[in-house]
Length: 311
Image (cartoon, rainbow, N blue to C red; front, top):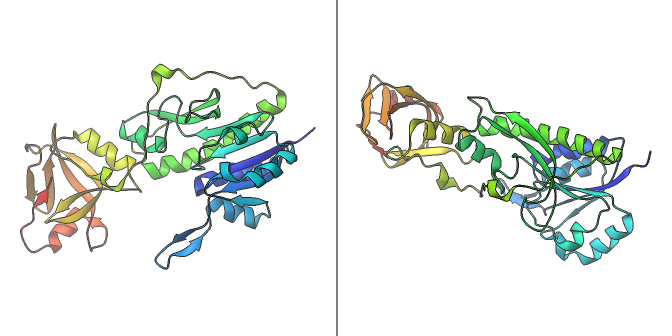
């Protein structure tokens, strides 16, 4: 059985299970790993390699790091001599030009964590939770120059738990990505790969999130919108409001029967209630700027002066 000569392109820890599968797969000959350059990290700003490069070093896999693979003419010329069958891309953070896209015999395939054409872009996991979706999944598409727009070869649905947050869904999807990749390899090996064009009428986008996207607007958002935002943006970038002009991170809330206008605040017996667009809620787990994470009751008990929230 002839092995497939493969290249893997990826960067963060999310990519590692799929890289590990390729490295250990009996039908794959992993030629090289391509990733982003080392970056300064932590308080000391010491250079840190991407997680896939750490894996490559540990497992003695050839690797190459670059800001833009399309400009690495000499390296690409060397790859052309390697008789590459397939390129797998997962969380690489670079667009591929025609020279790379035409390099492998079978094609370049991108693993994406949504059921395309839904949520093309950088943050599909978070947007599925933000919108209260009950199902997401992993898609593998044959890459074209347009972002996440290639023909689908794999679609693997995954149910979303009612209380699932961004961190847990991220973890489940990174392992589902590896399982879906295995399915792709088996189909390629069996000569049974089929291509399904994406329906452009159903396209939606999931652009990169910023820290300020975590602001909780109690006056304009419903309870479900606020709850979904808290789930989606945990652990990053997190959700917040302001308490006495200090940032208050919010980790969990409960529905409340208090009758409050949107943005109105009511404090009673160390419980903190806020009116939102359709009903009221109670803040439960929080972290005030400069303090440790705690329950709201403990925070209120420790605050001596009257407090106000800035909705």
